[in-house]
Image 1 (spheres, one colour):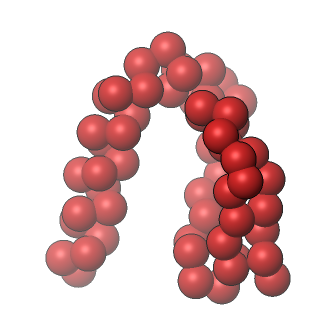
Image 2: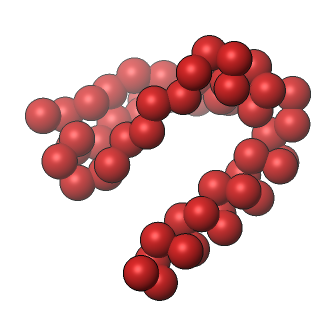
Length: 56
C-alpha cells in the first residue's frame, strides 16, 4: 500500500512511502499546530527519537 499526500507540517509535496516499510505516524491536528509554531524543536526531537530507534 502506497501512502501519498502533502506534509501537514511544512506543506511540501509530494510525500509518499510504502506503508509496510516507512512506519508512518499519526499526528493530531493540535500537535501539527504546535509543530508549525516551533518546527526546529520538532525536528530536533524527531531526530533524537529516530536515532534511538536505529540503536534498538
